[in-house]
Image 1: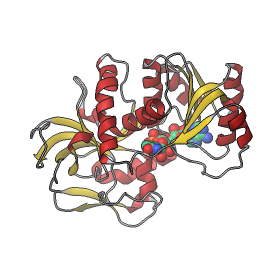
Image 2: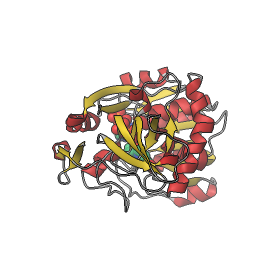
Image 3: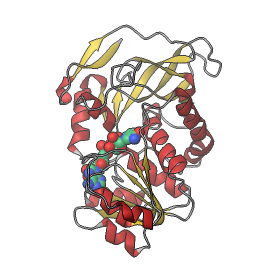
Image 4: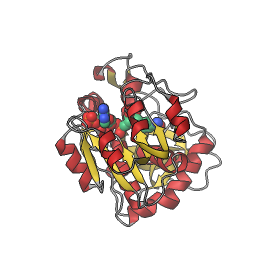
Length: 323
Ligand SMILES: NC(=O)c1ccc[n+]([C@@H]2O[C@H](COP(=O)([O-])OP(=O)(O)OC[C@H]3O[C@@H](n4cnc5c(N)ncnc54)[C@H](OP(=O)(O)O)[C@@H]3O)[C@@H](O)[C@H]2O)c1
């Protein structure tokens, strides 16, 4: 099969086309013939040598895809050859075929293209598990998500809105802010010209913040939280180390937590998949959630896709056309 390997840690140019054997499904796995593969920021971190695949995972990049079931492993009852699925992957999505746990696949939503469906798993699993299961977002709460125009951000805005939250977000340009407002954010803050702390404090503080920026945002997030507020950290784009006065955490009963998806157990991911099918797939069916598509690249030009992502010019998701 055609695939993309990381030839050495480095820039986008280390993503090199190659051919390799088609994977064989293990117990409880399916092999998917990939039509489209989603591109995510963690792929760029892996390419740069800063995010190693967990033990046993494919060393190829690619955390999500959509396509058709090509082979079914022993013990799999839900899927049959030919079924259209989108799936969370332990790696290996930048290829014509990929093996994954059968319980991490979901049906392609009715009326949705494979191109769009390929963009659902990584962001939906991450947003639901962190914003709802870990962060406990409730209807009517003031919710701040940083990086509102990112793949994660565009998904978080729509799901939070569908849950009845009041959505605040940050982005790096007025154009990106407009895109966030169109998705349902009540207020989009251009962080280059406005201070999100001031905006949120004027509203009484955020009850929940979902942050991928870290660094100097950590103490500022603490200031932007309402009493009893929660901060969920899903990345540290500007670094994980910072000086913080924890007395405020204690005095205002704040919660700081976070998680990464990839190293979690197969069982945990299967539970998230079941949650998504129950709660998020109906949002898609009623038109409350749709992936925001930025651009597409052929599989062979995965390097171009990474260059686009790292330029930060994108709004929403970047996909690789594999079939
Ligand atoms: N924990 C997990 O399991 C998990 C899973 C998936 C992704 N992630 C993380 O989630 C983040 C988003 O992933 P993605 O795939 O959606 O990538 P992406 O589309 O490239 O998003 C990165 C975003 O960060 C924004 N940003 C950078 N500096 C910022 C700042 N100072 N203030 C506000 N926003 C800022 C960028 O917007 P501007 O260019 O406008 O600044 C961009 O929209 C990444 O850091 C990724 O590693 C975590």
